[in-house]
Length: 229
Image (cartoon, rainbow, N blue to C red):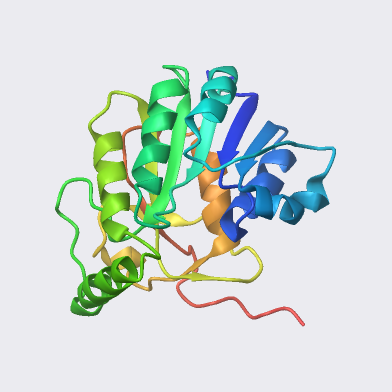
């Protein structure tokens, strides 16, 4: 039986992270958020409801103190910069979270667990070109996210790596559907509300069937729901 009570959200001040904070509180979890000092103000709507640690998500000193106290860790695995931000974050989570903790990570569709994903030529070309350009500009290192997830996949921990499709804003359409592989026809519409990505992350904490899987998720609605006026 899953008895999770206290969760850490690493990268909780971003758009996805804030949706996770809101949903986790609705589910009754005690929430501690780690976010960059310059982003703390983004969490003002939940002041007094959550604990906030102003630090980078790869700050080993902060995570070494926090993570042994939690039952689950939700990590926005962001590949910012070219200094191993994603891989250092993942390694810190693996090093300091309790052995029985649920570890949920977010990433993009370009990550593959078993090499059986089938990518469109457009996505393959975009990842190749954007990845090189972004690294040259020292903005993002997509390869670092690959290294991070490869490290996670190699462990015997209770991990789930959630791979999101093209994200959009809007009201929730419901819990996303998922497949083991990109290229599955049921997720070919390749669209997902960011709020529902967050809901899937939080729901994964109690879904033991997702342990050691890398679900590729997409909206449960093939066509967008009408926008509310």
